[in-house]
Image (cartoon, rainbow, N blue to C red; front, side, top):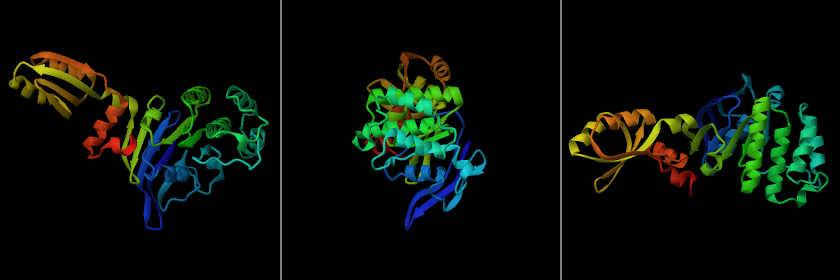
Length: 301
C-alpha cells in the first residue's frame, strides 16, 4: 500500500501540494485527477522519492520512500516527459532499465515492442510523441515493480494504442498484482480503467472515492407527481443533491442505491417515474458541485 499522510510541498512562495492525505491500495488502478498546476506531478514525484516532502510522510509498503533504494525498487515512475538516451534505441533502454530493476522481464519487453510495432533497433529520437509514450510505458510495465506511477502517460496515445496499454495493465494486474497510479487532467481518459479516483485542486484533495461506490450510491430520477403534497412526502424520504424543474417534470440527483430510490418513489403517488443512468462525468459534477466547485471548469475544459 502507498500511504501519503499530511504531505505538503512548496517551491519558494508557491504551495504545490497542501496537506494531502491519500491511501492507495494494492492491485487497483488509482486515478489522480486535476488541472495543470493542481499538484499531480509534484505529488507523484514525492511518491517516487524524487522530491522530499516539506511536511508529512510518503511510504510504500510501510517504508519511507525518499532516499530509500529498497522502497524505490518496488515502483517505477513514468514521467510526463520521459527520458531516453540521445541516440538510444529501445534495446539500449532495456539494458539501462534492467540494470536498475533486477526483475525486469526482457522477453516480455521484446514481445510488447513487436506487438506495438516499435522496432527494437530504431533510434528513439525518430519516434513520434505517441510512440515515445508507448515505449516509456512498456519499460515501466516490464520493470517488474509492484507499483507503476504514470504522469499524463496516456496523453498523445491514439484510442487503439490506449486500449492496448489498458489491456496490458489488466493482464499484469491479474498475473502479478500490478498497481498502476495514473495522473491525468482528463476524466474521460480514466473513467473506463480506474477503480478509485482522487481529485486534486489547488494542491489539496477535493475528492477521494471508490468509483464503484460512487456509481452505486448516486442516482438520477425523473418524475411527475400527482400533487404538491406527494412531492413534499418524497423529499422527506430521500437525500437530494440537485433538483431541476421543467413544467411539471422534476429531475433529481439523489444519494442512495437504485433499490432505495425505487422504494422511496414507490411510497408516493406519481403520474410518471423513471431512474436514469448517470455517467461518471455527471457523478463527478454532482459530487463537486456539492463541495462548491464546478468540475467542468476544473478538468473538462
